Every structure is written in C-alpha cells, then in structure tokens.
Image 1 (tube, rainbow over the protein chains, first blue to last red):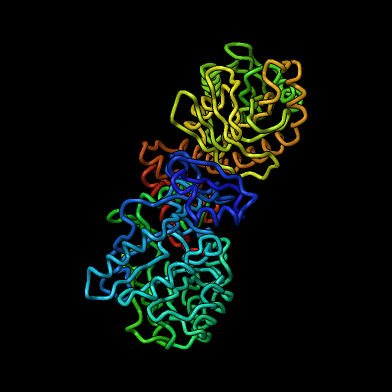
Image 2 (image 1 turned 120 degrees about the horizontal axis):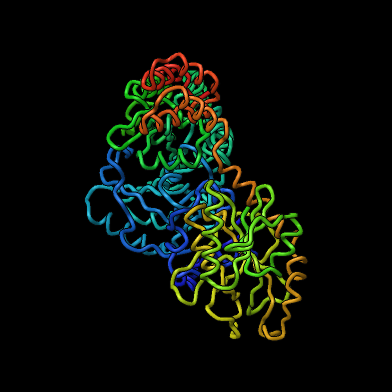
Length: 329
Length: 267
C-alpha cells in the first residue's frame, strides 16, 4: 500500500514514526530535511501522484488548530478544525484537496501531543463548548490503520468536558470505533452523494450501501451520527436520486441517532477550481453550469437554491428541521 | 520519450534496443525514432544542462517523459545492480529533488548525489554520479516531475573502485538492465500521452478559428467551450457547424454557449 516513505529528519526517532516504519518494512525510506522539500515544490501532478501516493512523516509547526469557515458548523459556537493528515485515501473529483495541495502524497504529522495542547487551550478559552472537526484535509478514518488517529485522539477527547469532536468519513473501516465505548461528545459524520453520482465522482470510495451499513452499525452501538450531504451535485433525475438516497439512509437509521444533517451545494475557490480543471480537463463535473462570484465557483444562485430546497423538502419527511444545517458559500 | 545520457557506451544499448537513427552530430549527438529521442551529453553538470536545453528546443510539446541513464558509484549496492533515484542531492547545492515514485518496477530506490569530481569516498546508502541533479533541474521547467526519472547502474563501490572499472564494460551493464529500463520507459511514455490534450479538441479549435477572427480572450473562451463540450460527450462537429452559421466570433461564442447550456448537467 505504501512503497515510499519520506521521513523528516526531525521525526526520525519519534515513536509514532518508528511504529509506522515497522508497519511497512518493505517501503523505501527516503530522508528529507523538511516535508516542504517533498510536498511543496511546484510542477508536481496531483493527478499522477494519486496513482501511487507516498507517505510523508513530519512534524507540524505553527498554528495547529484553525477556525472553520463561518456557516460550516453544526450548532456549536466555537468551531475549529485540525489536520493530523493532509490528503486522502480516496479520489473524489469534487474534492478541494486536488486544487489546494501541490502533491497528493499523504502528509502525516506525528506530533499528536502538540495538537492536543492547542485543543486544550481552545477549550479553556471559552465557557461554551468547542467543536473540533478532524476531517477537513483528510478522511478521518480511511487511513486510521496507518495513523492510529482515532485510538489516540478519542480517549483524549473523552477526558475534555467542553470539547466535541467530529470525525468525517466515507470509510467503512469503523472497527476502531466499534471496539470502543461511544463518546458522549463525538459525532461520526458520513458524506454521501447518490450512488449514480458516487460511481462517477467518488473514485475508490466504498459503495453507498456499504457506508450506510457501517453507519447503521455505529448508530446501533450508540455513536451519534452526522450526515453530510455535501456537495450536492446537480444531475439528471436529481429529485429521484436524492429521494432514494435519503430513503435508504433513513430506513437504516433511527432519527434519534442522528445528531445533524448538513447540506451544501458544490462550490470551490476559483483558484482551486482552475487547478482541478487543469488536472482533469475531461471531467464533466467541471463543465457544469457554474459561475464565478467573489472568488468562488459555484452553481448559479437559482440552481443552488433549487437543489437545496428539493433536498430540504425530501429531508422533512425523515428528520426534524432543527437538525438540518445549510453550508453557504 | 527523451533520453539524456552522458557517454556513447551508455547510450549504445538504448540506441540498439529502440533502433534509433542518428539525426545530428552538433552540438550533441542526437538519435531519434518515432517519439523516442536520445542525446549524448558528455560528462558533468554543464554539458548535461546544455544537452537538455538542446532537446527542449527540438520537442516543444509539454509533459514529455525524460530519463537520465548511466553508470554511478554506490556505497552499498553491488556492481551491475540498477537503482532508481528517489532523492537527488548535489555537492554544490542545498537543493534536493525527490522524483515522485509512481511507477511499477523492480528497481531498488536509492538516494543519489551529483558530484563535481569522480568520488572515491562512499556513504552506505548513497549513489554518486556527475549529471543527475543538473538533468533534473533543467528538465522540470518543461514537464511534470513524475515524468522525470533517473536510472543508474552501479559501476563502482567501496570494494571495487572506479579505477578497477573498464569503460568497455559499460554497454554490458546497461544491456543487463534493458528489460527493466524499457518497462519503466513504457509506463512513462503512456502517462505522457495521457497528459496530452486530446487531438480532437485542438483540431476543432483550429477549424473554428479559421472561420472567424477570434481575439486572444475569445480564443481562450472558445478553447474552454470545446474542451467542456468534449468532457460532456457532445458533438464537436456541431460546434463547427454552429460557428459556421454565426456572423462573427462573438456570435459564435454566444451560440455555442446557448447550445451547451441545457446539456451541462451531470448524467
């Protein structure tokens, strides 16, 4: 799975690096002074590297937690994201990572304890609960067998009284959660598009049915579930496809297990979009009826409104409105 | 596929294998057949960079595959063993390159240091040559880094020094590894072709541009529309037909846009 590991000099002896190196004894280990030497240079092809990404082990420095964009929350007042990993096992054509990063290598920051320090600091800075989103720059669970993220961070969050954590995923590798007691203040959020769209755009992602089954098992175990219907993709038979998706999801889940549902239409910073389009000029999604406005490329306003309203109408049947959140551009 | 190789002895097995024909002697010996190009650069950084520049002027299309091939010293590997450079250092520079490893191959991957002089001090996990860093540095302005690779065959190591090595042995070292080299070159070439824009798009673009006068901005708009129509699986012939019916470039753009608008939904 991993043929090459780039190892930053500063984390060569880090126990987490050593553990990962031991897991991939066949991998070629190439030393680097700083991960940016490998990850940042211009003139790399994200598309080509997706064929066989390498793993980079490094230390993250500077600010380790960041405020999330406004209107991306699910009810919390203080919202942050943090990224122990940049890039994803999957290859979703709508994903902003393709436009944001020059490299598709998995860049893992092994200094988990430094992240914890900042998370504790943020929770202490406010009387209100704080939310921490872990799946912005990666899938929270897809590479967990390599990173050990959930095993490390969930017990840590369990001890924090005022911290909520969201794991956002398309993975069905949920064993790591199933062997634990569900956390009171954790949400396991699954992203979905209808299966016809998933087949076209979500390369390497488990089927919609498999994800629904994994999600239902976690719900039965007592985990709070988030549904992320994001991005909404304009397509033929939009209403029928999303109706079928919601029906399949909500027949498998009891409403009380659902913490939140968020909706957001496909949108992308213009600079990212242009890079993605350059990587995949043959991609029909990028030829959709989109417009550029205020540095963001998105569906035209009336289209976005139509897609959201159709979904809100469909969801009304299954979930109470106070659990539904809309992600705006 | 562009090969940049320092010495004739290193190049000859490749020339024979791909049945390349000599097409020039100045400023560098240059061999060619179909989409394969080979240049014999001579030893060292400067000549390598010049040879790359020479080949660049002969091949203007972007994202071509480039390979530097030759013999090298190594601190641990046995004589005649090949390796693929995973990290390229330089004894005159702090700047390192990390050719992305995206191909299926049986070559060991090793760090490689480009030196100003032949090197007789060996570090265990390091190869030594005199060209790779300059090669990589010169090529990456015209192609994506994944399409630039360096293969070296070990000619000397701590137990068999370079002085014990006969230049007559060079072709044999390369020949032993031709199969692996060709397999890698084949993958690189396929990916290079995958990276080229579909010819139907360029042909349609040229056809439509012949019908009206398109300003620079409108040319970009037209190219985007044709590429998008192709992505959506629409008929590019229809675009030519719409352009022919239009009275101007502006009207052609508008009409193509209107024709495409209802077809822009994902299926």
